[in-house]
Length: 301
Image (cartoon, rainbow, N blue to C red; front, top):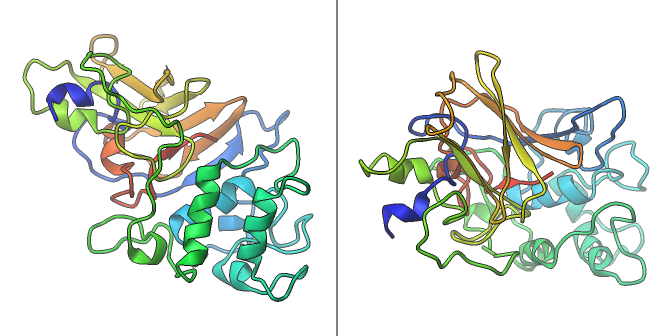
């Protein structure tokens, strides 16, 4: 693929080559005086709201699904009758039907047309998200440690192997046009640095609805922003475009001072990175399967 394919999109949050990459989200309301965030995986109490910092034992894609869709209620001491935070929680027998695990019952409730979970007004998961859970259950529910790194430096996935890749939008970039909407999912800074005539890009990336989206697949169709704060306190807000891309080029901005922090904001709710970054090459870490500690794609709150 040509250098054009990476323009103004896959650069993550900074300015040079990949150094340290995203290791996990912290969801929180951007205005804590007026908003609550039903998708907060921290639960105000450590990872998964379970009251500790130990890994959940879940693969990253499964951890992300339950953090995003279930843990508004299903945490230790939460409103639901059982937590859905750890590997042991999901593999335990269901209270409603002990012949099934909580994971299997979760699939049934997520797909149920009459008693669906999560309840309104919370957003229902996409079919692609549920398929990820179904495939994990079908594979025997192998353990994983989200955020741990293997020999390749990527986050541990389902059973240490590749997670299923989807394209939720069912739309792929097929044009040869240059511009900020092109080739979602690919790392633009990597390509731009290899081509002398390409414009310099400080920041860019693609925001997706699920963790494991295919290269070239459109992300969310706008409606969100990525907010970057550099080490000097400078704040830059980048709108997410029609293909899910966001970018900051040298043509319209001075360089950022590293390290930088970033968050995705939509409808007053934010998903923030918990580690400052020394690189703007987002999609170099936020790949289909995730690399350098990233669990996968940049997710919308």
